[in-house]
Image (cartoon, rainbow, N blue to C red; front, side, top):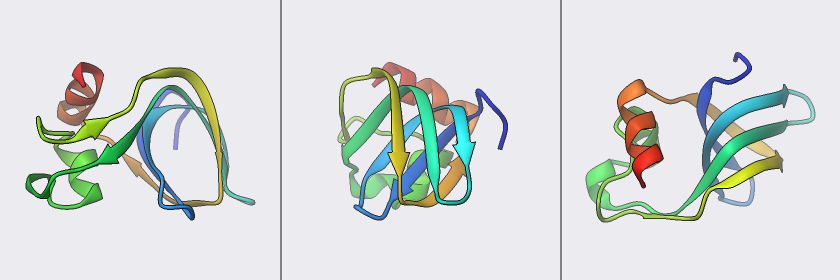
Length: 92
């Protein structure tokens, strides 16, 4: 993973977050994102949380407010986000 790469993060606490990597430490599973948003709910047309990374959120998804920066712990997955999905996340 590269600094400033757009990613979708899942956590042990069932959080789903989108943002751009500022800092990533695989062990013990810590990542800092900039321009971060969380997905409160994704609709079935997304086809799961990986659909949020490949196609982005749809009109029926519920996306939280953007924050300048967040550090997440207990990471369970880090998925690169497609350019199409980045556009949709930025509009949500």
